[in-house]
Image (cartoon, rainbow, N blue to C red):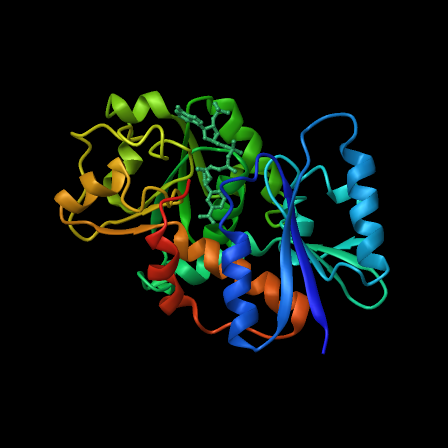
Amino acid sequence: MTAYTFGLIGYPLHHSLSPRIHQQFLREFNLSGNYHLYPIPEDENKGQAFVELLAKMRKGELHGLNVTIPHKQNIVSYLDALDGDAEILQAVNTVYWDGKKLIGANTDVQGFWMDLSRFLHLAEGGRALVIGAGGAARAVVYALLKGGWEVVLAARKVDQARDLMKNYLQRFPGGQDSIPVFPISLETINTHQVERLGDVRLIINATPLGMAGHAQISPLPNDFSISTGTMVYDLVYNPPETALLKWARSKGAKIANGLGMLMEQAALAFERWTGKKPTLIPELLPILSEKDEP
Ligand code: NAP
């Protein structure tokens, strides 16, 4: 039986839950294997490190790689091909070998969507407010657009939000104006000047605000108005209930943290590496929440 070797490249990695998640997946299928952390800083030697690890994949010594900050885009030019969402976003979080080629995939998009569908009837569509315009926002906004949603995208640098929209032009050949994303500055939210926010039924935090170390900080002002039917989804999962989620719960909103997305994207990666789809996700969530890791 194959003893699998998987790994994660990014920097820093000491906080990663991925080794524990993938060990659980291996256990579910009675498989043996290891999940290694490969911390690679954003410096001039990173290319050499990518080449060495990818050579191991080509030789079958490494059976799967995850990629995280700051390398999701850096790795693209070292791969033979990109599939689906990775091709559109030019960002990769999973590398697999298809027997002939090293393929880059982006399982964040589908992972986020699958987790969100546990809480909302997504097919109805609607308007979402996404806060933050970095790598995670790029995947989340794309998932929402594919599902037919409109997005108000709030960033502290509104140009960053406008730039993010360029990633979707391939899907919206009518040009930037045809993309249902409305970039605004985060400051504008704080001064309540945005009409479009009136009928938002989903709010997503895609900034690091609220993470352990900044746990008291919420991206929204306390007097921001939401209705009880609103869903508030925080991509941050440590602490399990961020300041934003505490506030949203106190307003009667539905809440979820990003642990479900983390699990779903990992399960999709595991399936590409082994051909087996983990089913233990809901049962695993409490296990992973037990340990207070960033
Ligand atoms: P990123 O690429 O660094 O982007 C972070 C975004 O947040 C940027 O738009 C940044 O704006 C903004 N931001 C940072 N500090 C801010 C502040 N004090 N006020 C307002 N905006 C601020 O990071 P990322 O990869 O998108 O990750 C964002 C968060 O999502 C992280 O907490 C990460 O752990 C989490 N995440 C979770 C999952 C999951 O599976 N649950 C997956 C991916 C990411 P500036 O450029 O102006 O700094």
